[in-house]
Length: 244
DNA sequence: GATAATGTTACGGC
DNA sequence: TGCCGTAACATTAT
Image (tube, rainbow, N blue to C red; front, top):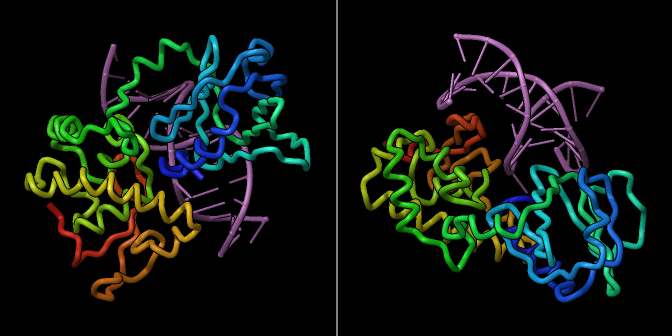
């Protein structure tokens, strides 16, 4: 489920409940669900991989983590692993295996929305400043940094680095200015390709290196390695991706 | 059945 | 204090 573009799709699917009042709430999320009843869902905001359901007096923050999922108007099992369900007159939404917390409405205004890779407010100059302040950071860690590229996940990371021909362990400070700009531009650009492909259920088909074994450009064997402080797996070509 | 994986947070040690 | 590494959580496909 979980990289930024997938979360945007979830938001789209949940939009149908906006303007409706919560009639019932259940699930094993560790907070009082009673107060939610009677509140109206006014807005759904996403910040990277997080989703905020904005109610009258509080916001519900949902993070799908690695294995989270959701469903709408399901008629089947009242699943025992249900983390949270919200019911409206018009239907219900269900969330599983995820982190659910409440947040003050004030908290929303403290979020740096310009760091969201999918947002209209995305600010590439700001990202550039943040990157320049961390020259010793590896490119693979930089892309996964949710304070800089909120919404980017491991798939996007691998595909972006291949597209721009940068080896994952390259140091941000060593990238020529043009490459750095390319990294920022492609992080957003690929995220929208991801969104489009995910929407059409053809995302995997378009992976060039992620989970692949041979380089689509030169046919060499790709390197699969845990890289960076995050120790997340990277797939890259030693010939077509330069180590800066 | 073991393993690994689109992610984050908490905690212990230095 | 703060940084770092590791464990923990949890589901599903291979």
